[in-house]
Length: 378
Image 1 (cartoon, rainbow, N blue to C red):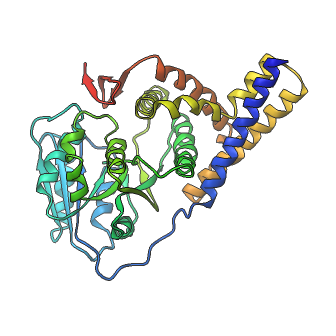
Image 2 (image 1 turned 90 degrees about the vertical axis):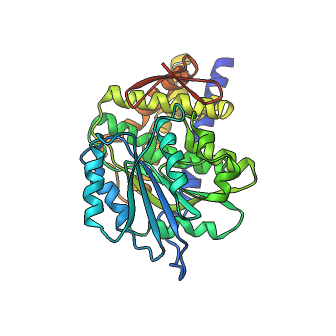
Image 3 (image 1 turned 180 degrees about the vertical axis):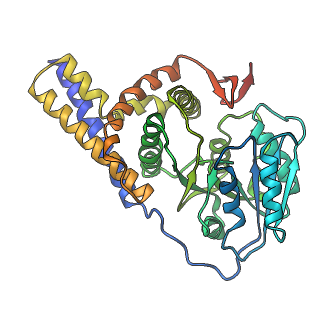
């Protein structure tokens, strides 16, 4: 009777948390645009790069095609002149001769995080006070700059970031990851924000002022951090600056990945979140609406557990599909609805593995994740 009550309560709790997550996401004004401002501030875009794929040129070109009347400086940073992405950048520079853009050869690593090492050098070359940082695989709408810098007109806002979506899930494994990104992640961020102000940032696109960046020691203070985006937002929030969410959604384009690559990516993500927010991550297992009904059914087979389990799985699939529709502006393929409960069961394994190790693989390199969130090579 005790186990029946415990697992039954956990199943109902997981369903309630799922519905809360769905509700706060439904209320958020996703895709809403700000009115264009007459005097937009000058901006410097910092773009660290490494390697390229079939989508890289379109992703980078989207920054040249911004409908932004203010001055824009674009700094592309690479570690080697032999990097194939250099050819793409040079081609874009020739196609946009009037742009204030440069390809920068960055020097030796200043820390374990190669991306941040590039940002350290690019930061020193920035002409403007407002800095926008973006990952290499991000494609943005033409009005992104105008919208992402608008909240910085409020003095209390120290950093603005955007939600992102996996734009091209090309394999079943990537469709599974799309449930994690396009349904769960952004809605979980809003669920956290419904409890307290954000104290972290999302790294696809971030905008901040040079002054706030200097307050936390610049990018060099993040040179050994794995979750540099999280730490950037967290340290600014600790200094009393508000982290704001821009409702414009950007796109992440990825080369096709199989199960092994997706699993390594998700495990790295799980261990990163576990180190960054250990207590919330520990309790995150309670919001798994497929796991707990299944555990209840296995522990106490019967009609109540069976009915609750079926209801939880059905609601989970509907909520996941609706959240993906809201983010993507289109419904996911009905043939992939089953990936939501499957994602929950695999997520339970990832949750456990996050506590059982500190090794990650990042860009083909094996690294050790220290308890403070910094990286050690080897």
